[in-house]
Amino acid sequence: MLYKIFLFARSLLFNILSFIYIIFITILFVPLNLIIGEKSSKIVSKIWPKGTLFLLKYICGLSYRIEGEIPNHPVIFASKHQSAMETIILLGLLNYPKFILKKELRKVPFLGIHFQLMNMIIIKREGLKETAMEMSDSARKSIHDGRSVILFVEGTRVAYGEPTKCKAGLALIQKDNDYADICPIAMNTGKFWPNNSFIKYPGIATIKFLPIIEKSIHYKEISKKVEKELDENSF
Image (cartoon, rainbow, N blue to C red; front, side):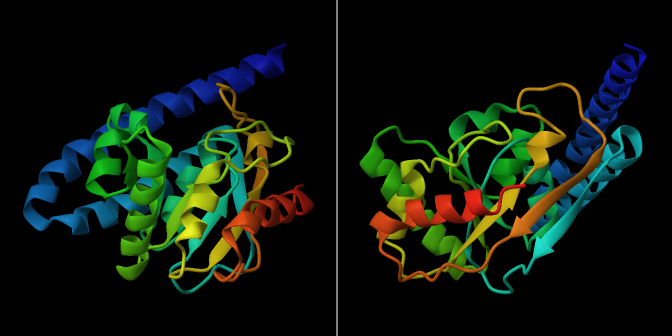
């Protein structure tokens, strides 16, 4: 019981301090964005993850390690999604990537503002065909601009240990993909920061970059290929 109280207390402290931190960043950098433009968002994309992960490590005892080789050219990252932790890690680790996000995330306090200033790919349309066209066009432009794209293949956060089930988004992008390789990303972050859990458990989470899947693979096969790669590399 005492240990659970201890975990709750430091998770609460982390939440409070990380929220204060993002408020501070917003107050400082949103006005700065009016002066120097996107440069301010690039700075935020590094200092917000770095500071948040610092708090996570030294308050909750939760850190991470990276395995595999990170591509040195713009790609589409086909990622698992188990908690908020990998979003924070990937944003800070990669070179100013773009996430494909649901439109509801624009309403997240303070962070939603930065998602828009960073020009994340925010899906607004409801129809499948329109969404596919929007994702593909936005991903193509991002790759052309030198920014990798991160797609959470299951569409939402999924509990640790659950088999991968890719939503249609990956195949829809791949159908019109002659512009980028695909790099699957496996992880076990949900083991330490479970989906919809207030408690952050101590430990070392792993983010694993898997070998590139060439862009020439047929779109009807891509979901099965990525599911196989991610499940075989679960840990």
